[in-house]
Length: 452
Image (cartoon, rainbow, N blue to C red):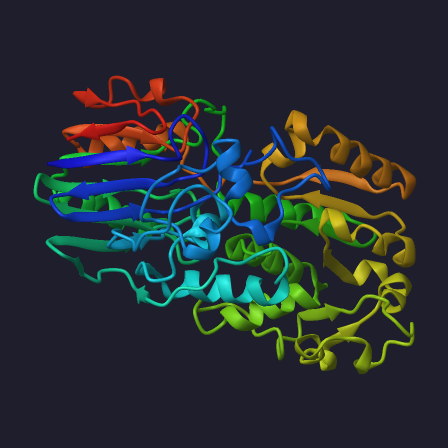
């Protein structure tokens, strides 16, 4: 018997945690954290004790109470007895939190499979944000690349790279006793690496899958125009060219395609792109994985911003060792303030304090993050604060963004090309929007087992 049980990613965006069972083989596809994880019970400093593992998460049914899955340490303060794991593998599609964050709870002896790029990104963020980000200890870590054929008992798992808003994203083709199962992970088709997603679609279609687990983040939100990464770059280039002052840019540090869009726009304008030490560390540690990524240590178009710290004298000893590696590219608020029109500066919401020192004049601010984070109702307070900063410094606000997920029309194209016998919408709040795209559709419910 082949079955799927959805412990996350069903009727929600993110939180993918899908158990595939086939004869005596048991594997998970991703092991992520839902975006609203904990919001019903935790607030600011009202949080579970990290030392108590899964105790509070089980209390509020926030984690599935499954035997032979979690580590001894995580179960210490719970009423679930520790038993040796019976899970053969966990396959991670990419490094976004909604696909990887709950790995910290699982038994350290369960084999974990992920791409080389995903491991590198996790290592980078774990070093920079050790108290906030981590996936726990794992004794059996296996790295893969596109096209590998990975054997787990009688199952064969083939990872195929796809385009997403973070490097190292994969979909999977799993050959089961009932026929191939295709898992899209998260993907898009409107960026500079869309050929990777098209390759995945071709391979998935050629496998003639029995089941397709298809992400549907945007299936219910078709816009009048599906913006491409090229269009984002063109819009940013126009804003930078017209700006009479410094241009601030807010986009995810892990979105390498977006970085390249801003980098290109900056170079075309004859300006310098300024990133902080954390962003510089990310770029420096990804350059051997991503062809064409500029070398932050030597590229004349990139400078590294050092915030005012400790002594206030901008001396190397004020910064941690990995920050000092970019000292030769150092720029401070003093240089930025004196020559504002020469620069485009990456700045996140929590770094807005730097504006107090830079004192922007005739500046522009380009918001290039997901619309959800700016416009979601739960972010009204943050939005108000951002607006207040823009008004205070008389900064002109712009938006230039395209999604890391396939549009509704792209998803329909994907399903029609792959032609699964059974379609299961995941990673979406609108599974009903997939109706009519396949002969049989299962709209999954969390915690329910489906025999295929």
